[in-house]
Image 1 (cartoon, helix red, strand yellow):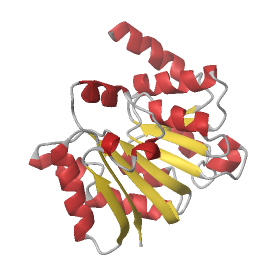
Image 2 (cartoon, one colour; image 1 turned 120 degrees about the vertical axis):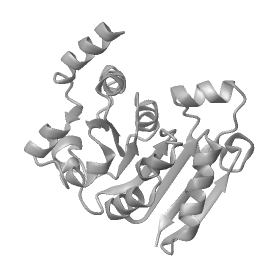
Image 3 (cartoon, helix red, strand yellow; image 1 turned 120 degrees about the horizontal axis):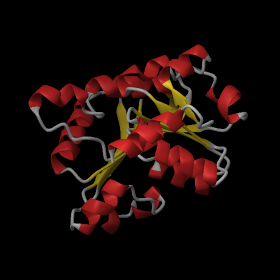
Length: 219
């Protein structure tokens, strides 16, 4: 496994659709993803904590008139999604290796049309609450990046994280159109995830876990 990871890290620099954080800064991609990377003015959807990129690649397949950017810090996982996208000739999906807490360095205000947060690390310990991707400080990042009327989508198998996220959202005064379910596949929202499942979703769904889902907009 270590040898495979090393091989993938070596190949990262050669993937035209994968950008390291330092490279993104040097090439001034902030507010310029459409111009410099996608070569069009189509809306951009960002997936935070994209892992192997199953969601970003899956969305790119079925939405050729939109652009997709998967963000994660783990290069060996990003390699999987970036390689798959290149093999399929998907020019409307790219990947960024960066910490989500540094995302304002790489994306400009109102540059994003929608956001997906799919099966993030639940960070169950109290000392890690601020590291949860649905904590207040991350919501502030998303609010700056997303365009007016843009939708934030969230999926998880973890009930504690889901309940925490709902509580955070309901306490805020700048959230509207909040909708949610604790059983996505038996709800009216089933078609909204486009039938795309990440590796983690397959794992927990097969174990009998209900998939929790919510969406909202900022005022």
